[in-house]
Every structure is written in structure tokens, then in C-alpha cells.
Length: 349
Image (cartoon, rainbow, N blue to C red; front, side, top):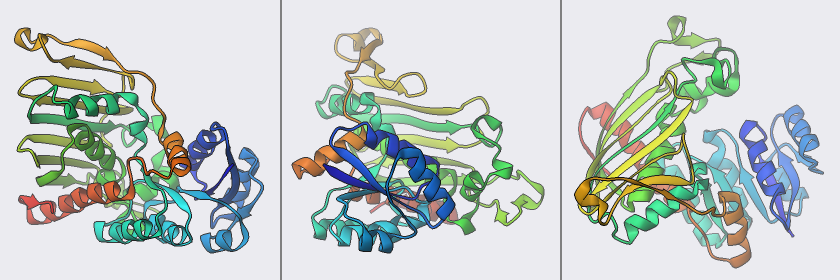
């Protein structure tokens, strides 16, 4: 039996709890949150026997094997670091940290401790990403020359996600003083991971533009100054010499939650749209290249992130995406802010 604690019991924590409860041989034993009403309600909802107000209290009073860190972004490292130092396996929400140097502290601590460590890039739950990655790795597309990727949401222009003007759970994501890195840090992190994971290459250079649009009187709602970026646009160079464009925004009217990737090589191409399906993509490979024809490739089901985390604990072999991958993606995000400030190209090291 693997005993799991959930650290941070806001909205996304419910998805973690449901996913772990569905895995045979897992038991949720604790919830942790500084808000006592929230953590107690969360524990009642999911039948969790113990509630704590801090990670220190959890470590001092509870017997458990692993934890999911589902706090707001600025608290990922402060919560995960003592857990890994105590020898606990950790699944952490993205991004790994507000900045890459902070994330590297967590990477090194987890690797020294020898614990299983994973970042919950939740869109890797879609089997199509792994099949696409394998196609590229097998050389079916040849040299990757060009790609286009986007992650578009509409929650600033539509109430489909809720009324952001009155909900702290959304407002903090618009305020740098509350720890937000804007659309780039919140959802752009996913599309950077998705595009580079499928391409199988690191970003080596980029030129980014970030934009914050006026959306309230004085761009403020109560204590929240709405100064985090709403849109981001990246021109990217890959390690293999290819180039591409990554874009993300919360102002994509009509797009509830759209992730799209098109990848073009000198021997083939693929395109996938997670808004339509996580189990199929279109490919133009082999004999279809000469006729520029596409066919639909259906992908088998694969273990999700939570299942792979538990499988890693049982096997002792760390599955992807680990903390080091989270750090690599964070380096790209950090470079975007430098590029915006310089208004120019940046090398990603």
C-alpha cells in the first residue's frame, strides 16, 4: 500500500485525489493546507482521515510514502523541498518554481535523496503525445525543420471557466504580486513542454513578446493588481537547427481550452489537436509524403501521470517528466522574460 498526502487542497487537488483513489494499492492518508476550512472540507469530500496545516506538521505527525504538491506556484519549492529531504516521493504541479535557479535547488535535493520526483505536466495524460514523440524519435519525420504550437484559452473574455473578476482562484493568476507569471507561466509552460517533448529537442534560442491588456479600471480588482502577462508569443530555435512558433493567450475568444501542435520534418509531418482528441493525430509519412496526403493515426491508451508516478515508486525507476525536465522548461520561461526586457534574441543555456 502506497500512502499519499495531498499538499494544497484547492481546485486542482480534487483531480489528484480522484486519480489516486482510482489506483489499486494507493491510499490517501492526509490533506495539507493553511486554510483549515478548506482542508477539512477537502478531506471530508474524499474520505481522507487526517488534515494538517503545514508540511512540517505533516512530516511530524503522519506516516506516508509520497505526496502531491498542488499549491499555488510560489509555494512549490517551499513545500516540496522538505518533503524530498525527508525521503518522500513527490509529484509536483507545474511549473517547478517561479524561476529556474529556485527549481534547480529542488532538482538537486531530489536527486541527492534518491526519491521519485515528477512534474505534473497533465497534458502528457494524452496518449497521442507519447506516440508522436516515439514517431519522431524513430526518424519517421526526418530532420525537424519547422513547428507551430499554441495553447489558447478564453477565460478573460468568457465566463465559461467562472467569473475571474470575483474569484481569488483566478485573480491571483493575473497578479505578479500574488506569484503569477501570467499566461506564459500558467498555461504556456504546458505548450513549451508539449512541443519540445514531441520534437525531442531542447530550445537553444528564442525571441519572446509578452503583453498585458487592460481589463479593469486601473487594471486592478481589490488587492489584485492585474499586471501579469495575458498573451505570449515565442519565436524559437531548436537544438537540431529547426525553428518554430509557440503562442499562448487567455484572450482567445471562443477557445475554451485549445492545445495544438504541427511538426514538419524533411521526411514527414504530424499534427495533433488535443481540443478534439487525445488519442489520435494526423500524419503525413511514408508513401503519403509524395502526394501530400494525411491519414489519421489512432493511439492506444497509456498510463496517466498519476499511474506512472505510482509505478515509478514501485519499480524504483523514475518516469518522465521528472524535476529536471521541469527545470529545463522553466529555463525557457525565464528566457522569455529576459527577451521581453531586452526586446531581442536570447540564448537558452
